[in-house]
Length: 158
Image (cartoon, rainbow, N blue to C red; front, side, top):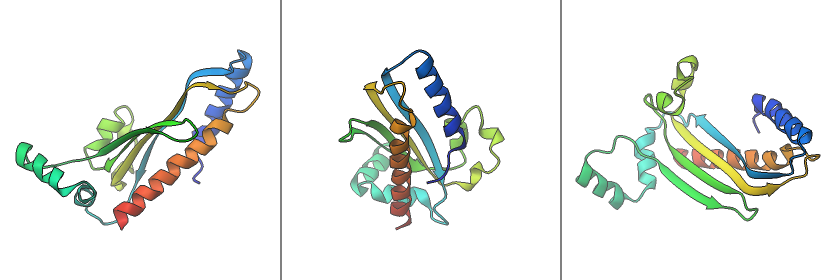
């Protein structure tokens, strides 16, 4: 998996804070990630819309007008008790200001992407002894998020 540079620093800060204050129970433990990627020279909006029921897209278009952007969202929980909010969709030139309002002008290569995933993985009332690294909770969830993005790319590219 790709290395997250800030990840190590954040884990260290969380671990030090938990140790200093002997925090064992977290009301909400989570990570939220935005994945940007490029799936090649594919017109992503029509491809993405083809994954949604054509009858639904047609009804939206006939009722409200041409669909200029779309996305899909899921909320759920896995067998480990990890809850998630997942949003997937095409990514175009209007997206940076929406998703990254404070930093999009600093991100020179942001135009190189054409798909986005917003993945929020979390657990409520989570107990983890302060002597155990928070990485033990985060690592498998980073892996899940990364795997989801890879599967999303494969679907769009197929």
